[in-house]
Length: 324
Image 1 (cartoon, rainbow, N blue to C red):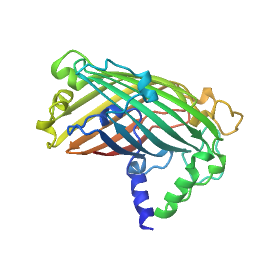
Image 2: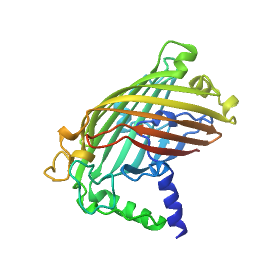
Image 3: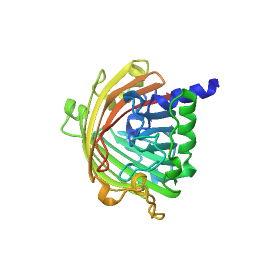
C-alpha cells in the first residue's frame, strides 16, 4: 500500500511536457548522464476531463552517438560552440470525456483514449547563434493496449475518487509512429537574444499532424545561460532559476486521440474532421531550477478548445531530474 500511495503522488503532481527537451539540456555540472521524470495532471484545477494525466521517464546522454534521431539532426562535430545530446524515453498519456461518471458515450464529446510511446530524441544547441534544434522519433500504440483504463481506475480507487465509467468505449488499438521537430532562435544580440526567443515546431505521423509557431520569454538570475554553461567552475554549485513564459499558435490537421487511428476507423464515438478545431493555442508559464546535480521544473499550461463542443483546459506539469 505504501508503494501505491507513492505512485499516486507522482501521477497527481504533474504531466509530461511536449517537446521541451532543450530545457533539460542545461547542466552546470557538465555531467554525462541525466534521468528526468516528467508528469502532468489537471488535479491542480480540480478537473478530471480531456487530457487528464500523463507520465514519462527519459534518459539523456551527452556522449551518445549514432542514435536514429541524431542521424537526422546533424551538426559540425568539431564546432566548440555546440552542445549536443541524445536520449531515450517512455511515456503514457490519457484522455477522457468531460464527465467520467456517465456509462455511455456522448456524441460530440472527447472519447476515452490512451497511448504509450517509446521515443528517441536528439538536441543540438549552437551557443554562438542562440539556436536550438531538437527532434524526436516515437513508436507505440493507442487503445486498450496502452493501459489507460487500468491506470486511471487504480489511481481513483486508491485516493477514493469516483471510478471512471465508460472506458469500454475507448478508441480501438492502433499502431503509432510519431515524429517531432522544433527550432528555437534568439534574435538580435545580447540580452534580447537570451531572453526573447521565437520558435517553430511540427509534428507528423499516425498520432497527430500539426505545425506551430510561438514566442518564449525567459528571465532569471543567470542572464547568459548558454554561455555560462561552459563555465562549470563558477556555476556548478550555484542556485540557478529561470521564469519561462511561452505562447504558441498551432494548425492541427489530424489528432488520433479525437478521431481514432488512421487504419481502424468506423467507431461511432470518434469525432470527425468537421468536429476538430484546426487553429489552437497554448500558453504555459512556470519556473526552472538548477542546483548542483538536480533539476526541477513546474509549469502551468492552458489549452484552447481542440474540438467544437470542448472548453479551455488547464493543467500542471512537473519535471524532476538528476545528473550523474
